[in-house]
Image 1 (cartoon, rainbow, N blue to C red):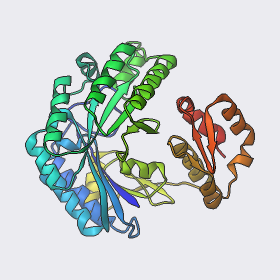
Image 2: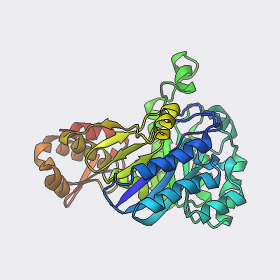
Image 3: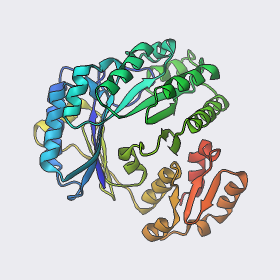
Image 4: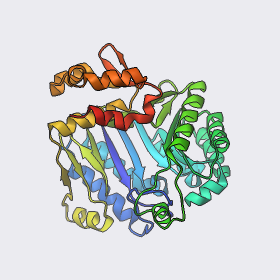
Length: 373
């Protein structure tokens, strides 16, 4: 099983919290999508003939693209890869959705939407510098359903310091009332190079403290569980059979090809990345050159990365796989730490699996690091 990720590096405007690679200069949008299609052709052997099961358009804002530009990329993929598609996802902003666009996306084989809602509070959306409002979010969900999209996810952000728990509960209840199959919920983080980062450095913005964020995370866990969602990864919640197949590839350490500037790839052993720089990417691909930057991983890197990603999921660390693939006996090598975490109620053992408890999810990264080799 393998997937293809496509990074569409353009946005209408810069969200104040976002440090993903994008540009608001869309003058070379069509050139970029043509070159992404070209990259797909040039890298047709990267996955060594492995069957592609998922395609994911991320960004940036893929929903800004004209359907025919997306079609060029998909045509290149269909012509050059062995496909058995289980899921084709497109990230979309609510203000971009129209019945016409949705129909065209469906005709291209896109069968899942990831909607960048972020909040149903207009004042919060304005602070984030989002291009849509709450009314547009609800309308987008309605027209997506009317267009026949049965699978869609919503992105929400929690931990906004001026949003009390009541407003976060209201956001969650509004989202859940729409009965999405999937929710991705992330804590607001302050990143260097963003407006939020600049305001924080200048003392104009004070991020929420850890306790406040943890309380909102616990509210998220409780309300989604009551509504029938499974927390199958720390930030991801799904109804039965609605998990993101593509993102699960990453968490299971499976191979994927990343196309477009800033995209990462993993062939099962080594990682590669494209430069997060549109002009460099365009220049290289215009000359049929691949601007790949190796990101070397040794055996210990791969082992620790597996521990980190697997521990974030509901299926947890496969102890038999760890022994088979890395020749490591985690229960023996980290017995004191594991017993300590079990006693604290943060980690649980079930047959040949080691996974986090509900309360342990709050400490996932620090627990994983304590188990690192």
